[in-house]
Image (cartoon, rainbow, N blue to C red; front, side):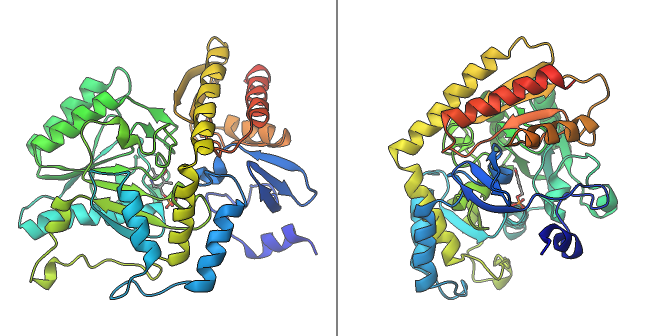
Length: 423
Ligand SMILES: *Cc1c(COP(=O)(O)O)cnc(C)c1O
């Protein structure tokens, strides 16, 4: 049986040009930070399998909790019915987000964003206020559904759908040197439009190229929104669950968002589940005798109990001292590596926020996601047993927290090797 041939017969892979993409690797198992191909070759998963796998692969503790839940209640309709795993998840998670008071379930990051945008727009509809404009950051990524695509950056990926996307006002991502531009643009947009909400990836824009900016400027932007009664949506789908060194990127902020989107690391990387949380002010605007003020949104698998059990197990693991030590260990070790390569002639913009380390490979040609250096680097790393998926010329590490020092060192040394050999 040739599995790869069968794959090519039946499967259409995501973000993949099927005509030119090489054969996919058949993965047969995972263990901690490692995944194994059919010949038992090990690969270090240095990007947590698209940023979801926070506790490593095939984690026994989470697996046991999922198993227990499966045998007890696998799923139940979530309108008119409820269950303990969902309630417990609400209670435990909201304790980490004291500025948020309700959780709303969906099943992936994109839908968490759709829910957030719909909540914000209907909030003003329910209040009888004409506010329709949505503000987002340049180079943003919020997912692949239509609302999420609309809120994303204008970067070519959404070109075929462009005429169907709704209008968004974009402001500069407030990286160093662009803070004032962003503030001025936001003020101008608020002045000239009826703005409903401002959506952003707090502190790190992931898919846009691991672009990082400081909490102080985000605090200022949120404060401008608050003064003008504009709702703030923190898309923490990638930054949540200690990616930035703290449980949530919002923990770095003085001014808190009204709405938060969570997914990716939520279930410890085991099952699709997402949450949109909101504060009391938003929730209250939907309470009414008038049925039209109801939030008419829900998915078949809303509040799936297995996903909730996995999320609770993941929270258990986060509350262990050993996990916290691992996170700190990665933060410190990234810092040392960043220092080591600081003056490498082929590296630029070396940047770190918590457990995320990113750098740009200097190339002579114009760079973009579609640039060939991306493919060259991807295969170079994979040939050395490391899964890194550069975004154009941006190489980043976003590891499961159980990655060992030895595995991390190997990732660093292969990146250095690439810096010396591929430019
Ligand atoms: C990945 C991502 C999404 C989309 O999540 P999916 O589960 O892939 O739909 C949304 N926002 C951010 C910031 C993300 O990184």
